[in-house]
Amino acid sequence: MIISKPPFCPVQFQDSDLLNSGFHAATDMHALWADLRENQPLYRADPGGGREPFWVVTRHEDVSRVLRSHGEFSSRRGTILCVLDLNTADIASDNMMADTDPPRHREFREPLNKAFAPSVVATQERLLRELSQDLIQSVLEAGVYDIAHKTMMFPMAVTGTLMGLPPESWERLAELVMMTIAYDDPDYSAGSAQATVRQARHELFEYFQKEYAQRSRDDVDPDVIGAMVGMDLSEGPMTQEQVLLNAFVLLIGANVTTPHALCTLMSVMAEHPEQYRAVQENPELRASCLQELLRWSSPVTALMRYAVKDVEMHGRTIRAGEPVTAWIGAANRDERVFPDPYTFDVARRPNKHLAFGLGPHYCIGANLAKVGLDIFLDELLERVESIEIAGEVKHVASHFVPGYKSMPVRFTPREAHVR
Ligand code: HEM
Image (cartoon, protein in one colour):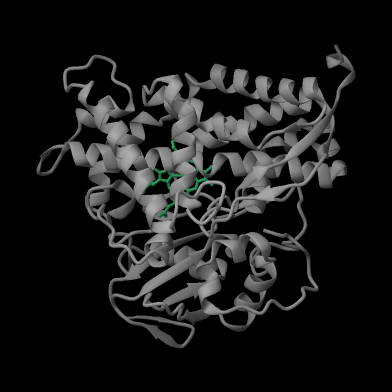
């Protein structure tokens, strides 16, 4: 996705483009979103092709309401746009944490919160530092290095460790994750979009089935999958299908988002060396810099809900049962909330970005992601004087995440680290 600044060139689009991955990869979506925010804050899109019409909200206030207000907007029929795009029924309703509403949601979420508590994340700090050092060293040694692939392995190594998955499977798991969200991208596709998603899901579920079979409720000190095997829901122990679905959502949640934030960190610091220097000279800016990175990168572009009842918004009625898409990328540039929203400002405070969502489904891995990004930034500031984009940058074709599949960079080492 191209990120430009106002004054924008108007973007001509058809409603189906909102679900078109190639359109997202090639278009300045910020120009389109700015127009919708200003002129059509509640927009009804009719994508055609037998797919359901859906509502589009782009303002911060409305995106917050859709994500937070589960009494009005439900997660039970699926939350990623792929459901609309591929016209598929969501099989995870009430069985996968992301596709439940409270109070059912709490049955999954509360025990799993423990698996990502700060004390657990702290056990991963050493691994996160090693991964950060390794990534930076790869660039320093190579001169020019494409970081996109290694940034994908960064969250994979951490979730793989927490979930107790063997390292030799991480590479393939990272590919399968990309197939599920970038099914139109020729680099990940295995035939039609439907066939790609089907193959990826099939392989992932088969994989987790084998992992499930190796765990038992009596495991001492279980990993995250083992913890789910031991979990009880109101109807009894979590079933194999429920464990598989929740392992799947954890893997997807971590691995499609974090790499995008890491790559955006490089690209934005290369573009704004004065901001990088400011953080180097004022370490107290690190925290606000990371918040700004999350606002700026918005690793999840949009989420979906279905109206539970008729809801009034901007003088129109969203009817019960209709899908509503909440565009986080758009909300995070809303001029009503962020002064000068198209400026990357490492000192921005307050910063009420919605990158991790809001309300009951607020990202369960937010703390893990923030600690990982903070450790990476710490290593970068310590070892790298300046960053340069040193080749063609390629984006993943997806309307769910704005990720990168190629980003060649060059680092100038800091004096103390020249070898
Ligand atoms: C920069 C990194 C990340 C970003 C931007 C991000 C973003 C988000 C967002 C926007 C949601 C809300 C979904 C909704 O409202 O329907 C969410 C939920 C979720 N995230 Fe993340 N995420 C990140 C990292 C992670 C990590 C590291 C993990 C795994 C440990 C993870 C696992 C999940 C899961 C399982 C959910 C569903 C939670 C629920 O339904 O209660 N995410 N994430």
